Image (cartoon, rainbow, N blue to C red; front, top):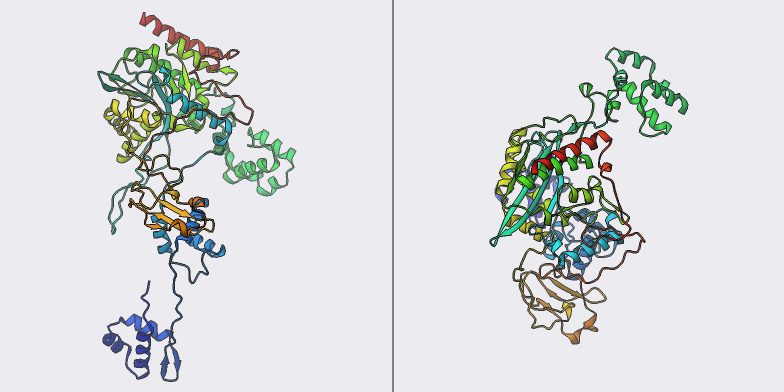
Length: 611
């Protein structure tokens, strides 16, 4: 940004130019750059041989008052994605500032907002569906059960936290931040495409043995597999040979496609052995035009899980389903719980990556204590693969884990409430470790995952359960609030003391700031006497920070308001089973009788070996 010189300097330059002094001589005499003198010369008004320097119009910038900062805070809170330039523009439109010329600079507004507690950070995304009263009721009930003295919600040796998460291979898992200097930014390898994608299923638990928390960790990697659906022989007839491309482009022209009616479009698609994503004429016409442009149907087959794998059939991402999860429970986790043996350890790829098995996938874990399976329950979320229990029907997994694995049952966390599941923190820890190295090969990535798992101990898992709200022992001493019990901080006397991190801004009904306690201060920094205020009791704390910096215990839940949408809540498996629940059949976990017979055979073999 060029330097703006005062009117006296500009007039001096204009006088010397009028006297015939050269620009280089003026620059040397006044200690200015030659470019600056030329810029001033071009801005002057030339009257014959003389130059006239008109005075620059000065518009003084005003400072940000406390009342204006309160209004800006409210606007920023209501519109978090607003830029500072847009914020100033909106403030002028609403009358906070007089005009854009007199409004404070962007840097000034930024510094004021930073002091008020705002910062540019990653947002927290919320699902609109999670705002229903039924889900809020279930969250409240789950928190209430966590705070109860029941043994089922005691995580020490009683809860197995299970979930799955996605990993990307070939260096796609990259760190989001790295150290650099002001003059040279850090350089990282550019991530490649986010394929292939793998799924990691993990289980964590802990127990206190001889006063020390001991860890239980088990994980396995499941690679992308081909479609579960049986491939029909006639699909081979639908795949186009290269010689057919010319024939397609000859008759399937864009003018011909646009002239077809809905019935004609449907007939052409039927002859090609394809379907459009929708039954509308626009969707069918879009598919035919795309085929006319590319001269092949192969991409259309891939998009619908059609086509043989050798001809480019789509690889289904390993987003777990009930079949995959039941195999993990019985073939991997069940054996590890009973015998402490890992299945497939040392293998780098799945031996059965193209069909339904996961026995050959690499697994890892840490088993520092012997679990008492009869006292443990599975804790997981409401993913479709987990088939959560409803108010009228029990999930097949509920009885399956009891009869086949010997566990107590299944506990479901509330919908859209990932913070109740401690294994999410385990995934976060492992992914941060993996992204630090950005491995380009699967073998290196698996090695890093094993290194991260080896660093996990019982104290870390105990902390993850505690962060998720589960009671894990005596609480740490909490810093005493000097104003304990005072909700309206604006009524405190002038001699009151505060926590240093607390911020209090008290405004009256007109929006005028009458009292303020700034961060890093322990006393009032601005305090208007009660006699100077019309109604001291009506002062409102409008600070965006408020009491968030004051450490305090989590409020205990006493009662939960009933949902207003009329839907029945689920039975999460903690309280006694309600009457009238229908138990699902185990066969609902699988797609056909052959799958069911195979799993029964595996479970029977394990049961006979245990005997």
